[in-house]
Amino acid sequence: MHSTPAKTLLGFALTAALAFPGAAAAATKTYGGTTDSGGKIAIDAVVKQGHAVRIAEARADNLKADCEESGTARVYVTVPGPIDVADSGKFKFTYTKPGTELKTTLRGKFRGAKDKKVSGTFVYADHFPASDTQPAEDCVTKELGYSAKRGGPDVELPSSRIAP
Image: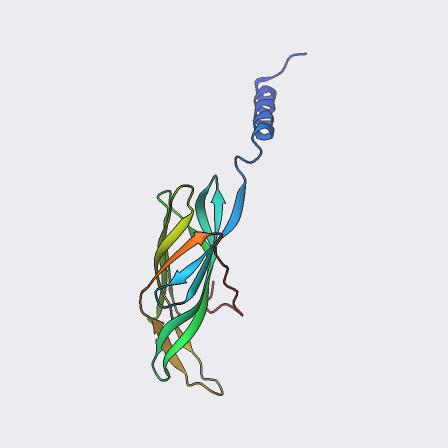
């Protein structure tokens, strides 16, 4: 029985896929670390062959922010993905709160052999509606540096503050 070129190619592709089962597999890894203001940051990145290719989500807690009415406050944020990571390891996310000029940015670069570290800058800005104990106001962090390493501590937050 003769094999057609298409069947031969298909057979080769299946053999190659079985021979290298992890070659195209991706896993989500958490990078945990700190910010300049004593806050905590965690970034969940999709990693393929040791290199980050996409950020699934970033979380930060205990960020020092300046608020219009109440002064200094500690705030938290979840930044949803996906955020693409360039081949160079660099990434950038910008979100402008609708109807305002308040911008949240997350920039950085994955580094080291097999992207074991990530560092960059982060700015969080949001408008908070009035509550029983707080006035309506805008709160903004300064540009904060951060650094995190793969396998570092995660950050768990109550809910997201940035819309997808």
